[in-house]
Image 1 (spheres, one colour):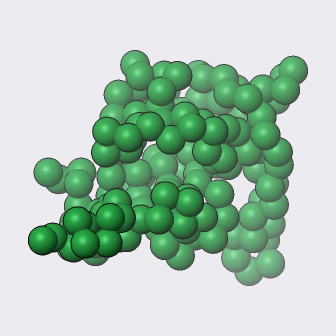
Image 2 (image 1 turned 180 degrees about the vertical axis):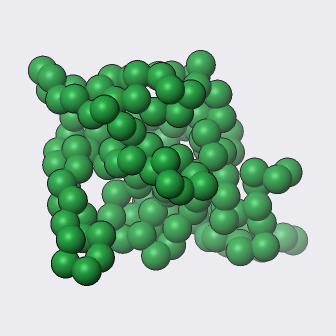
Image 3 (image 1 turned 120 degrees about the horizontal axis):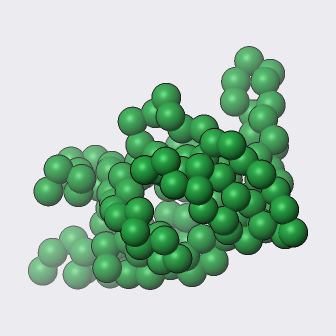
Length: 139
């Protein structure tokens, strides 16, 4: 019996790939699984515009997308600096399973290796375990 069978929990690597259900043409997007991030998941976005209850932004592959706005969140990014970010709801596929209406804040992650960050609140929702030796992106 494997660990996964025994505990019946999804086992994620440090890096995984997701596909946005509404925008499959973006292909697989690399995501960092970050147990230390206690805020919403984060999706890369620049040129952010809010309009009629939606947020549009440029994301991976330089594509502009539009998603329903859920909220705003203030993120403390260090040294007393705060950043206000829009929050959208996203349906996405991770390891052949679809997750619906998951909150993501939108932020410029162009300086990061991974355009998506999956944080601790999401990991708790799906009751996942992170295996630091597993890196699904290289598989």
